[in-house]
Length: 393
Image (cartoon, rainbow, N blue to C red):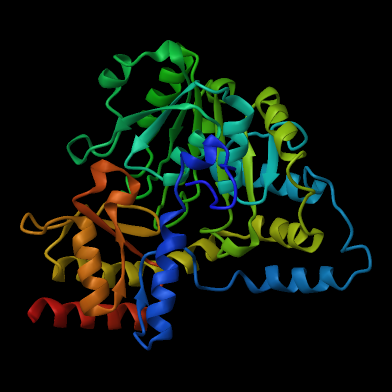
């Protein structure tokens, strides 16, 4: 509605989107906590543990240096760019030229918007997974693109139905968002699946944007779409230190692609921000150089948390695929439940536990809920106790 004192309206792109679900819901949870509710949150994928001690040490040492606090290169310092290139070679076996084939980002969520702005004209078509990360949809709307949702369903192992995709008006579609290991369903990447996705993009001249922040969480075989022959010609990949390195608040991510695609993203990014804090970039480069023992330590904790989350799903009568990877557990609600949203609201009210309803990720998630592993084991045990008490009445 217009302001009561004038007839000014926001841009149509703003009217096309809503406030992010978790931003709104977290205010509600905060109000409940202020009233003494003591909510256990299992909804957000924000790692709660510390980064590696050496990363913190580098950060504090660098922050004390006199040259640390001025503007930095918008494309990141050479140490960080080389760190990402080395990371891709070490873990994915992918050669990336640090000067031209990658761009450090202030978080991959920022990168989703930058890619959308760099590639999409108003009216261009975008393939968005249902269910999928809501930001793919909101960024596409902000770019004034036309959204073509594509179904991911349990009966197809949450993978795209390529026969159905071929029936879409592909000449109108410029960009396709994919994400494996998939959020929210936890479906792992496979070489065969990534090959099919790259082939689809190449045949139809559709840019494939692969969002890849979960490849190291409870996953023994991290993969990059850039490891598929020919992918660099048509694909863009986002990666992040938020989940794998416990650095969500640092906003350290990267976009990897061919030099032309990267140059387009650079044009958008350098007109939006003025670079990152140098000590954080130097510390991030240190984090990118960590060895397998760090990954093992992170996953040892998540493995124990996952066991408790599986108990919670079972207590609620939900079913789930134990092959899931990543930072969440995705479960189908019992047939006698009205919806995932209704169940999550009842759990919040009666058990004082905050979980994510699946509908926020798309209509194919309406009969699902999602549990985050980003809560301490004692808090997860308390959530399990409360939910069992709720179920047993």
